[in-house]
Image 1 (cartoon, rainbow, N blue to C red):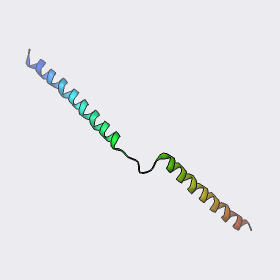
Image 2 (image 1 turned 90 degrees about the horizontal axis):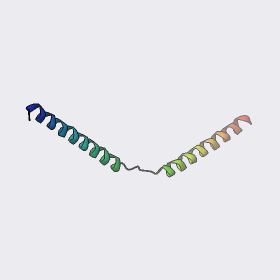
Image 3 (image 1 turned 180 degrees about the vertical axis):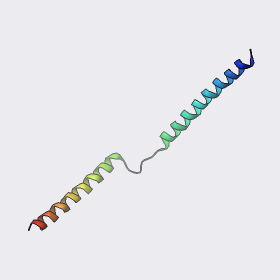
Image 4 (image 1 turned 135 degrees about the horizontal axis):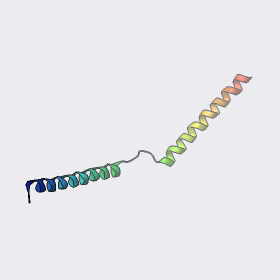
Length: 66
């Protein structure tokens, strides 16, 4: 085995080790993300706010048209 073969072998090992560490970090970050509110609760909150907003706009338009 020549020195180039040894360096190539070490380079391949380093590349696979780097990939392993990168995927491990990505998996850890994905699992650690916790949302403070569920999507269903968020949707309900937005719907309530939009409803209240439209009602207030409707009332203002009625008052303005009088």
